[in-house]
Amino acid sequence: MPELPEVESLRRILARSAAGRRMMSATVREGRLRRAVSRDLPAAVTGRTVQSVGRRAKYLLIELSGGQVIMVHLGMSGSLTHRRDGFDPGALDPRHDHVEFALDDGSRLVYNDPRRFGLMKVVARSHLDSTEELKGLGPEPLGSDFNAAYLWQITRGRAAAIKNVLMDQRVVAGVGNIYASEILFRAQVRPTRPAGKVTRAEVARIVEHTVQVLREAIGRRGTTFRSYRDSRGQPGRFAERLRVYDRAGKPCPACTTAIRSVIVGQRSSFYCPRCQK
DNA sequence: AAACATTCCTGCACGC
DNA sequence: TGCGTGCAGGAATGTT
Image 1 (tube, rainbow, N blue to C red):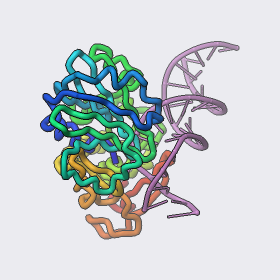
Image 2 (cartoon, rainbow, N blue to C red):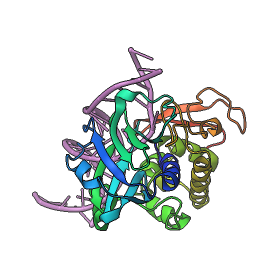
Image 3 (tube, rainbow, N blue to C red):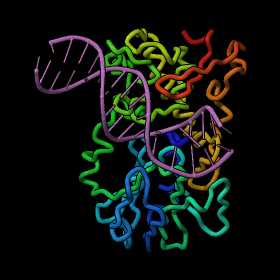
Image 4 (cartoon, helix red, strand yellow):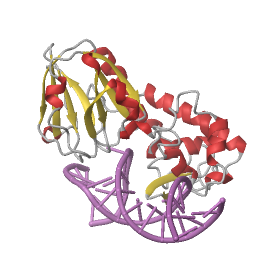
């Protein structure tokens, strides 16, 4: 489930464990991701030192000496693990260890992605914000630019379902399918509601719970259903906090009515027909 | 065996 | 008409 909380968790762990380390080599075993990994990548990063690790939306940004940044997106099924002796790969299949960076302390950063919907590229830091990937992104959901006034204004007149708008990365960057369902449950708004018909009070609740859900998920290092692992190889622990996602037919934690599932914008969505209007 | 955590692209409908 | 925008649908892929 690489949505924002998963990527932010990776960032925090890597910022502690990989910062200051020098990259001794990079190996691309399988470069056919969403876009092909450039052949120049190993040469561009070898010998560089990891200065810091950032994030924009669901993109992880590994900042290197020399002004280069490795931009990583985990797609649907990707993970980036920091491995040393004794590392337990958990559910990760070594056949999908596509890219590997060897660090100067003998540890390795390994990008694993079964479905290969992810992305990895090297960009000059000065050009980061003008890349195709980042330039159209909306505000960070945990930043001050994402507020009720903004969401109110951007939803007016829109016929699309509120859940689709919330997941539109140009509207707000980082909310994916799982958290969208959870946010709307807490905000008591049905995922199918036309965005333009969501009231002021509801818009305010959506913003409030977006922040609350994402913060809580970051605190639990994300959500794991199947193979997602954080950079230490551990599953995320937000899965046990999910109130509606993947719980069709089970009782609503608030009122015990059976949770329903519905397809919105080709993505499965879950809601309580009683609590959510 | 149908479903799926992501993004990107196409094409249609609509309004100015 | 032509252009921009909004929106829906499909595709990429391997696993369970």
